[in-house]
Length: 154
Length: 364
Image (cartoon, rainbow over all chains, first blue to last red; front, side, top):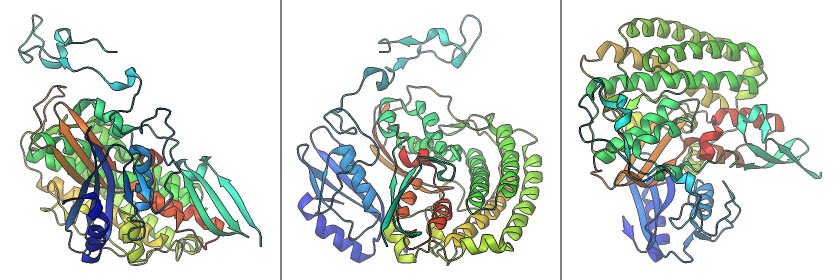
């Protein structure tokens, strides 16, 4: 369910009372113009699931903690704070859990700058008639010589 | 009495990887444990965003090197869900066979190392590793790889089962069924083992749900919940599958769940081998430029040996825009802050062993 960020606390308390007592995961997505936080909840007795999602601004995003309802939120909130720079209100989640990055943006933000070799290959295009045999009668993946690379790697 | 702080790890034989624990002690009673993780952090979630879909399965396998097929399958299933690809029926059966064999192998490795941690030294460890190796050889016959397989392809597999596979598998399963029963009877008649596992690290039902633990750790607290039964995928709803759970909530209950799960997996593999249909099981060859994704956001849940993995993917064009993993070991390791409290220092390692973490999976 999509909610507004100021309704978050009351929504999650209501869902917890309704039986969604199992927190599966907290994560976020950087949509370049906004952040979206996602809370995956589950009711273990019935198997019903609910995803609570709401938008946050890119600059100084804040969410209230839910650690008083879900103990599992402890490390997920710390990870969220570390990877997306989202401030967790109501608890100290500043201590880094997984890594120390040296850029100014948090690592899972799209604005995070990282060195080129780690950014993966440019898409390669196969020849159109990929599965037709070449001159030597070879098919498919053995036709390595027909792979064209649009842009060089790095 | 004054409190003492001691540091365990990051390199310690009983932490099964690079885990650092800072333990606050009063005498030898544990007051507080602070796990420090992140030594193996590789930023897989970010790396996957830069690779095309079928470049990532080999990364996924290294997340949980004890059960690589399971992670591989979960990732390929996520891509299949995003691209809208159906898995062939025979391939579904073969995937289940391989997943369950992998589960037995993973639990055997767990059993061997966990027994080490409670001071039962190397006999069981050696037996378990020997038996695990038999399964690895069987998987090698099926997939071509011993430790890392990368056998899943979109819509199917890279290799079908070899003609003699079923016969070999039946033999191995008969042998394993007998051996695992035997290990159980040895261990449960061993007073030292029982003393160190019973009533250690007790987690109540409510605590287990609130802490969000998963897999055998959750089921060891008396909760009848398994992704294979509650959200069945592939052919699990056609098989006679029973969720194994125990009510104790202590280390022994978690041990018992895993032992029963191995027997259940053996039954599942047998049933799959009986009922597997003929036909084609080969999936699409790896081509980096594939079809356009049909779904923008997908969530895929799978029951791994260590617990539930949930993969959330936002697909955009030929690469994921965002990829997030709910790693089972991550959440199971976080309970180390709570469980050992009030126990003696010597009980810390049975508790750590009983939640079964793989540190590469914790740190991602």
